[in-house]
Length: 142
Image (cartoon, rainbow, N blue to C red; front, side):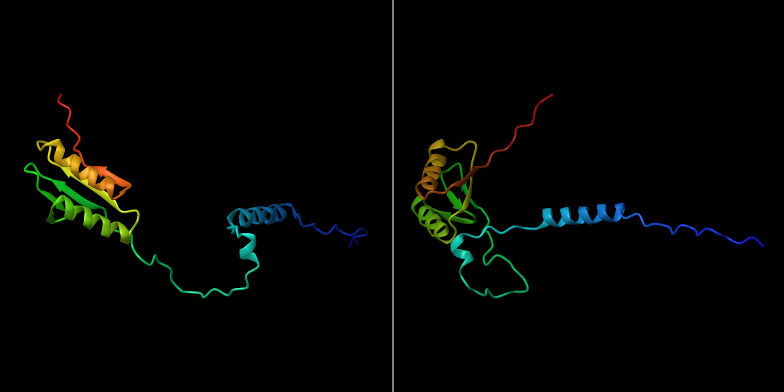
């Protein structure tokens, strides 16, 4: 019976793939981390902020107000008939509640342009920034 005179080499563990994975994880966490930018004054304030389980906006963004100008000069704000003066006061009170109030102006295609221009001027006087005019896209004839 033959006897072994030399010892078998022990298998070595190749650590290269494990090191690659560790580096990839480090890069992933570095990229995924949100770095908060606190001002110098905020860093020195010792304040414990309360924690909540769920966060939502305190108020929802209001829907855009729709102003309709009819052929006969009648003006409707959403579903309510108003005059130019009432429109101005309604828009001012709505803008006081939400500064970025949006308005969509819908004018009848056959109405006098002056009626629509009066509504647009009223919106401008109230300083409505998000102002849109509703139009319909004409279909191409073939």
